[in-house]
Image 1 (tube, rainbow, N blue to C red):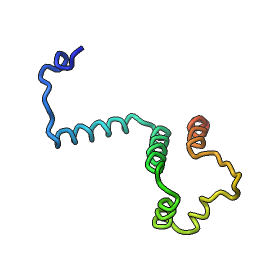
Image 2 (spheres, rainbow, N blue to C red):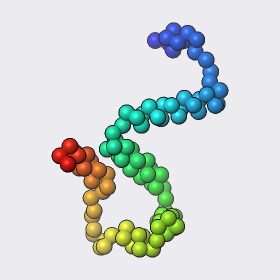
Image 3 (tube, rainbow, N blue to C red):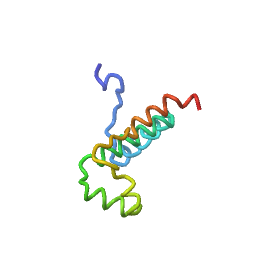
Image 4 (tube, helix red, strand yellow):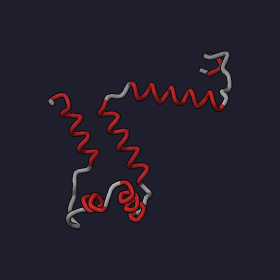
Length: 100
């Protein structure tokens, strides 16, 4: 079905109108999400933003926002340490959320 047949008075939005529609759409999406959905979305967005960050850049950010101790706490205790990811922890938490 062609959009113009559904909305015969379709108009082109100005940049300000488009921004307002985007903001309303984001608000609608967020309003329909529960806390678990928000946490997973936030985690995914953060991981995407850090995907191409080098160790040097990440270290600089952690030291700028937190401190050296925080950076040390983030380091694996051994080369073979495999820690369950926060994403997996969030999924496990959301599966058990109703039991809390």
